Length: 68
Image 1 (cartoon, rainbow, N blue to C red):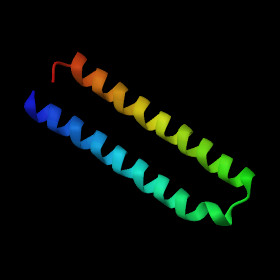
Image 2 (image 1 turned 30 degrees about the horizontal axis):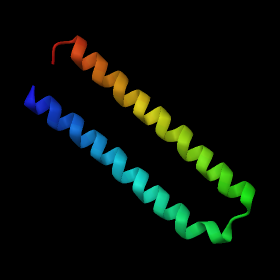
Image 3 (image 1 turned 90 degrees about the vertical axis):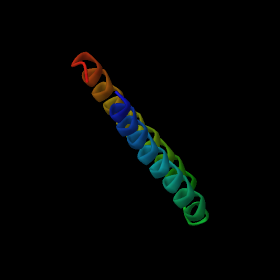
């Protein structure tokens, strides 16, 4: 069980790190973007990360069901 929690913690850490990097990229690029582009970028990030977290949670549920 400890190994499983370590893996889960690592996955969430990677997702979190990616989110932070994408937000920093947006922050440094926003001056060159039109308002429409900025909004599209943020909506795209929200959509991508929602899908990533849903996939991660679904995997977590499957592992719990399998008794991992």
